[in-house]
Image 1 (cartoon, rainbow, N blue to C red):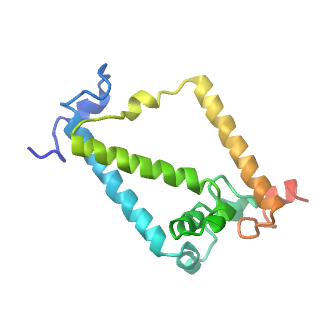
Image 2: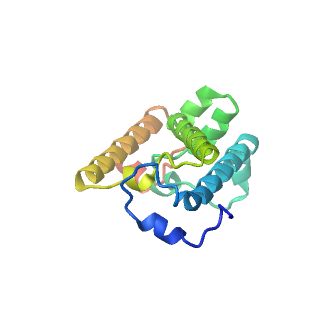
Image 3: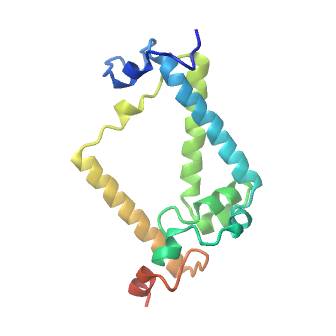
Length: 178
């Protein structure tokens, strides 16, 4: 039996299973996406480790950042540069560009380890459909958290004069900074 391709996988994701982490018949259906995540995440981390995003992005004719459009950085502005610096051991540079690179990298490493354990044990431990159920209260809290993180990122960029993340010609920059 090929555990990466199963004809009965469509029903495995739509069922509401009461046994958390114990559904062995849907295991082959969940193995493929987990394996794909591990391979693609490791490939992305290796590319970020070896290729400098500033040099790689210099061939673009436009600045690929929301800060270039709005004038102020978004939550993830500088994340690629921060991850590159973090993976190369430059912790101060990573904090300068985006402090969220640390929890983001920790979450990616956690998911890689968790999915590798699931593949090795042939057992689903974490099911996202159970964990990610949304209510209006959770959605509001998530939205407020995003707004607070964006405010913090913008404040840090402006107060520390991070010209790499700011665009003085952007409409939000002119509205909030001047």
